[in-house]
Length: 302
Image (tube, rainbow, N blue to C red; front, side, top):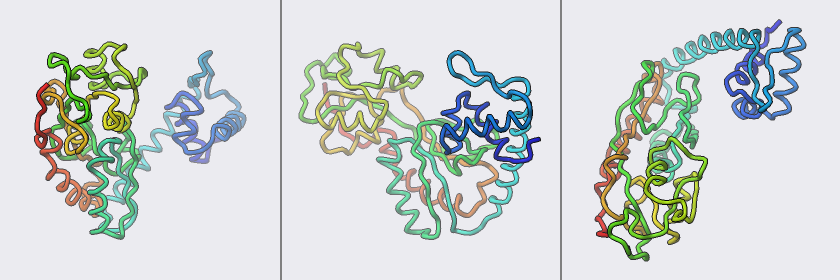
């Protein structure tokens, strides 16, 4: 018998993640605890809930799939109740979890959160810097800054700006090849494991692997490498513009233009903390639209 919600959450996490290590990370416990508790649940039920594949993945058995589906229904009900109660909260105090990309947090968002905290000292802000899309329905975050228009019907948000991308190099490096999008410089690119990201794909199409002298899955690390004079990199204009040691090579790339949205769950849009964040931080970011759209830098001729 399963009468402990924590056991159901455990089975659901393993089913979703397909591996004990990833399930442990999502549950914020260690791998050995997940293994031990899963074995205890299976023994109590008298049946296997998962089969381990030769590659190490955990695949639900029919019984495991049934338990996971039941857990998901319970989770959805409790989260709906949680959002309904939170949506009536009119206190400008308590915890507010925000998620954004590393580059946005580094360059644009954190100063706005500082202004928000100064105006609302009773609100504790937790910033999850994560390039994954965290679930607002499951309350993995209350507010998200996302580079794409929300498509889920239950989400609500507003567009901050378009986001432009361009090539940057250190001002100490003089362009040597006007026909080359990187100005003839060595290229700083993404880690080879990164795919299905527009900027990474563009760099891989535009520069041979031999030209890429430094790779990183972190745009902030790429930015630091550019500033150190290692070569040229494709960066969002809000990260590269305004940096005194960098120069933009050429114009923003029209085929890489994206968007920036601030989003929450519809059930939370009337919560006082969420409204205050949208009003203060949302407006603060909106005032920086020119930086997002690459309109604040002088173009360097190649």
